[in-house]
Image 1 (cartoon, rainbow over the protein chains, first blue to last red):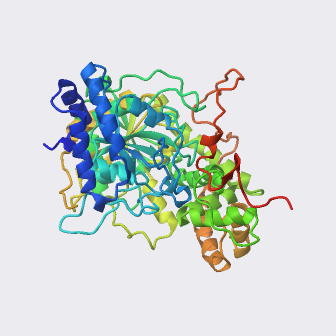
Image 2 (image 1 turned 135 degrees about the horizontal axis):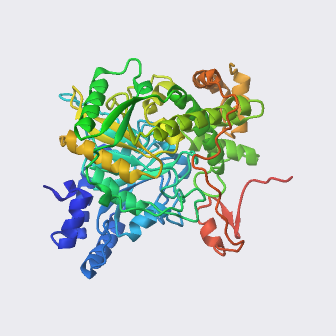
Image 3 (image 1 turned 90 degrees about the horizontal axis):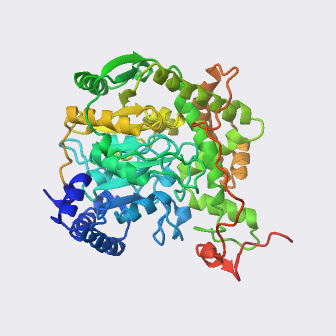
Length: 494
Length: 95
């Protein structure tokens, strides 16, 4: 097995035993990254920094001071501010921006000894489901349909993270998830991705999209690796007022695989009209696997599911229009070249027209509209009320004794890059139909690969857990993972 | 609710995004697609429901009112497109 194919847990054990050094592991990843430009996953490579950190990690390992991630090479989504390293949310408007500070999550990973290999491609400001809105160009899925060389999307917005982990360029990666941006790309690339409970990971230093929905989380090759990363990424941070002051459990220690006596809910509203038969079958198989593992599976109802996407497409743009107001060409990033006599409003308008791509412009303007005088109640306040009802749907089923909810992760397998370019924006938004409810309700959700479609592309299922019970959720996911025994990997063509 | 070209122009200006005149009709069409989708929310009975403020019932943490940061002018200005003499520089605002 090549070094870069190792799981994080395997690498940790091998590093501690001295069977491999972090420098060797890091060099192996850097070589894979150099050979994988066709995937366009790593958009800012930091090989020198990686070697420095690997050497420091090796010293720590030798000294016997080695947290789980010490010496493990990871990729960091471009949405995380990283000190002295380009961080531009895949947007032209942050061209040249090199933060003077490190995000809390990436700082915690760094302090645990993890080695950052570079920054990963994504949709611009995390607005997209296919990584096609990036200023760096599309990230490409390492998976292809059988007998077909068409380039497929790795999903989005964390498309670079998903592609990099699936292709063996790094052992794990950070993602962020506002409406499905960890779970959908994980499902499209046959890896595992977890969105934690809102407030579990600090948002400080992560470039904001929709602050009441954004949450960072791990993307890795299996449930155990996600558990290891989550423990390192979580915890209270006084610089994020919504970060939860709760103890962080040892999530890995909670993986027993024993789910006997657990109750798993199957929400009937997730059976969408026109859902492909393969997704139906995958879902039914997942249900059977959890039953075989000793869980009790019950049908449940989440009656407001249908309204989650429309509510999301009011709330997220509204928050984005406010968060993105800071990109004005004054303090950082791009400023348009001005004409003779241009005033400050011209500077704002030209800078933002040049700096933001079409999808970001669209969402900022939709957000501006729904917040404008006369429409605030009709749209924004109504959406927030519907959000309260969506959360109550979940509260009710959890109160009835449901421990976790099983749904498909996505309505289809990965689609071709460019395939959706003629569709109206709403068609693309439907990608998040199974994931967006989880963000609106602030719950933890995880995508686990469980099968392949007819064309040989990975498909995933989603498990949704109770707030703050990521440990229990990960354990249910672990049981599902063991039963599904998904071991396929993409054939190397890049 | 249908958005016309004039409304699209107004929204673009409120958002401080320059949109050329010939791009306004297409923008208005996209707004209408999205707003048509959002329109479904009108079907929901929200009588007596409070708009959600926070997914987790929480009280914002308080801290001592003391200075915890500061004295880093150079770092604050380090990424500015135009910084002069310790200030952010912009086109003339006051005539």
